[in-house]
Image 1 (tube, protein in one colour):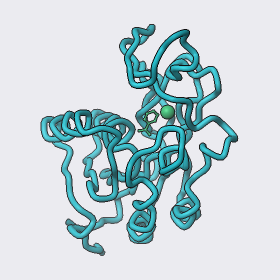
Image 2 (image 1 turned 135 degrees about the vertical axis):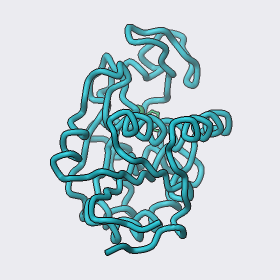
Image 3 (image 1 turned 180 degrees about the vertical axis):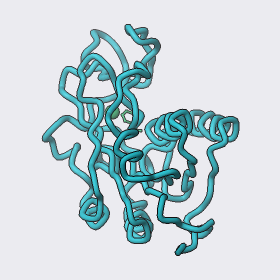
Image 4 (image 1 turned 120 degrees about the vertical axis):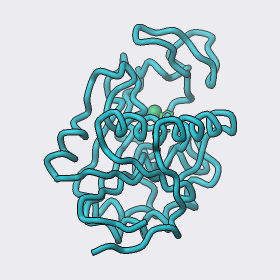
Length: 212
Ligand code: VGL
Ligand code: ZN
C-alpha cells in the first residue's frame, strides 16, 4: 500500500500514562515510539491526539465511591468503563512519551480530547456521547485528507473508536497493527472484529511504501 498526498497519519495518545509505569499502562507502549517516528517521517500530514482529563473526569473510578477500575457504570450517555486516574492536564503522565518527540515536532496539529469532566472521549473525532465533535473532522477536510492511517495507544479503545468514527465521517481508514498495542485481549479481539465489519483495513508498517 502506497502513501499518497491526501493521506494523514493519526498518532493516538502516545503519552506517558499509557506506557510502562504510567497510570493506565499498556504493555509494549513505550516500545512503539521509534517505529511511530519512522512512520511519521513518511507522511506529509501528521496529527497527534492527546488524552487530556481533569481530576473530576467521570470515567475515573476514583470519582465514584467504592468503584473499581475496569468495571462499567451507567452514565447519561450510556455505559462507561471506569479507569484508573490517567492523563490529568498538566501532569507528567499526560505528557507525550519522550521517545515520540520527533513525531510531535512534525505534527501539523495536536487534538486534545476528554477535557469535559462529564463525558469521556476515546475517539479523536467525537466524545463518548457520539455527538460532541473535537474539530478533527473539519481539520482533516480542510487539509484535503481523504484517507487516515492510525497508530498508537490503545488499539482496543482510542484507536478503535477513532477508526470507527473516521469511517462514519467518510474517510478511508487503515490501522497499522504493529504500531499499536491493546489494553486487554478480549477488547482487542472485539476491536479486530469491528474493524473487519466496518471496512477498516489492517496492515503492518512493512506493507507501506512511499508514494508520489
Ligand atoms: C484510552 C482508556 C481511557 C486510550 C484513554 O487512549 O485508549 N483508553 N482513556
Ligand atoms: Zn482517558
